[in-house]
Length: 253
Length: 66
Image (cartoon, each protein chain N blue to C red):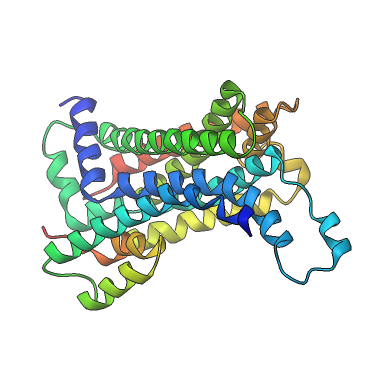
């Protein structure tokens, strides 16, 4: 059986378990609310009755930069959280239920099994991010000004890379551990570790999180790159997937 | 205040997506024979949990029927 068949089965499974719906809805909603909140919050503050007259001068006028930073902040938090939640069960649950053994009795290699899962999750996240990007772009256009769309799409592409780092990492955890919650906990540990390392400015240059800053700068037309972070992120994805396949090959189901 | 009211139409798509999630969750709950924990509690969570309610149900409430 080729990878395409297994991939289709994975997509169907994600649809059936509402994963596609969850990721698409959450990311799309934050795509819409981010520019809206950026515009709305200062005006809501200004509308508070009884505010001393001088204070309203200090409330900043919302700009398109606020909309972008709000979008990147929300996506970085909820996208990563979803990456963990959607991937933690993918291998562990099939081992728990015994369906992994069932699938692997057919001519499917264990590498195919893992890679099809990664591919299906990638499609879900890419599609949802595209939906969110369209929503965010349109609301930013209505509330502020049109953003140049190529840099804005690049921002979303960079965010997708970060999400995929966490999907790959969680898939590895899901392979290492037998239970879904164990995999989630382990992946959360990895998340904390990366966040902790990011506290050191020197190290942060090389960590996936830096891609958010790069993307935001791109979308706003600021000249700032983070190529090392991109290479490290892509490297992490490959290493995690490779490790997952190697571990899974030696596992008894 | 009029300034704030002019933003109300922007909320419509957001409410539509939330409503859609809620309906899909409720339909799934109604069809399911068994959930993790009592069904009526999940119905309340879906109805009053805003965005989070249906999602928490989808992730944690459903048990596999295999």
